[in-house]
Amino acid sequence: LTIGTLAFLLAHRDEAEQELKRMATTDALTGLHNRHWLEERGADHLSLAQRYQHPLTAMMVDIDHFKGINDGHGHLVGDRVLAAFAQALQSVGRDADLIARYGGEEFCVLLPMSGPDAASELEQRLRAYVKEVLPAKVGFEVTYSAGIAQWRPGLLTLNDLFGLADAALYEAKRTGRNRVVVSAS
Image (cartoon, rainbow, N blue to C red; front, side, top):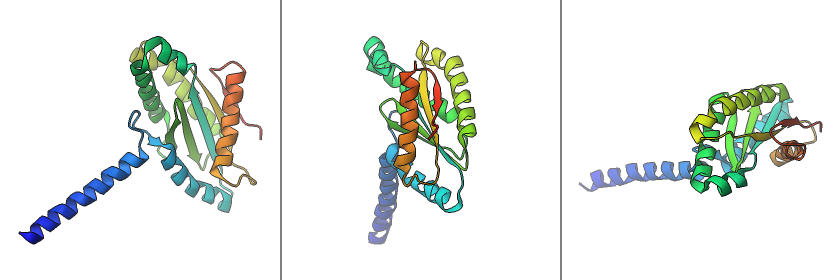
């Protein structure tokens, strides 16, 4: 009886640890991985890019006028938009892409072994999906802005790469939103 009870408790401890790990790396609202997971997994891809000079590209995506969605339609609708947008990213992303909710209404896709052209193709698939599918899911049109940056020698950290993609994203927002900018740096 004691051995059986101990085995039962150990089995459930392993399940509980797995669930805690999943909760620590997953965004509860969207079901995507979170920024912490992206930074951990992305570090491995950055090391490979640095060591073997493989391409590595980041794309930052931000839903346009999200505060207006929350203010005009309510936070529950805003949550629905975030979940539908996350589903859109998953639908158009490739198996090798690392997709995460970066924070708020901002998402990040890390494309290992891929240059800006692959990110641009993903962005075009996302734009078509968001235009065609999201209005039926959320009840109105949703737009987004995106920034793309490729790793290059001299970028020492993943945050350096994300910073370039984020700067390109903010250039897209500054120049009118609902567009993508590829970093020249």
